[in-house]
Amino acid sequence: MNATRSSTQFLLLWLVANAAGGFVTGALEGGGLHFFATILLQGPLLGLAQALALWGVLPRAWRWALVTLTMFVPGLMLTGPLSGIPAARLTETLGLWEVFWLQAMMMMLVMLLVGLGQWAAFHWLSGWWMAISTLGGAMLGMTGATVCLLACDPLQQAGGNWLATGVSMGAGWLAYGLPTGFWLAGRMDRIEDRKDSGEMSEEDKIED
Image (cartoon, rainbow, N blue to C red):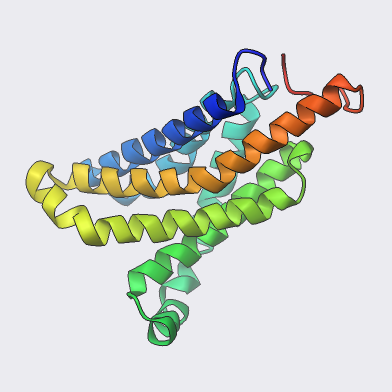
């Protein structure tokens, strides 16, 4: 870990970066860009926000943003089949509402693919990162759907669509940041210990 940034500081920065990226994406979607923001801007904006949180900690952090935007759009395109029978069946079996399960399944798939790309680019993440990223995707979808159900109508009345979608997407990405942020912070501490003992390659070292 960077000597000037503790695990707690990194975690807080990671959470703020994800929440801010989600809010900006949602505000753009609700402000008139609609699904253009969701499909084409969400990956780049979140990848950039996350890369900024990793800057100074992760060598070549710009690759994180590149991988995220590269994998995000194909991931969204693969979620089409989830819009029908699977979500409806989960609703019938487990209750709640269809959008809850739809968003959960969609974002699980998207973040699984994004996590796969990130692991391929940064092998120090280990294969567990794909599971953590998938869990984060589920929390992203569930939280965003829940916040929108509870707060979108009053937020629309108070400030408009941009505020409602911004808050719901920001909350969703904040939820994604919890498991991923805790895991990254813990992993980086262990990598720092390995680096100090000389067990790591130069390419995979965390910067001082």
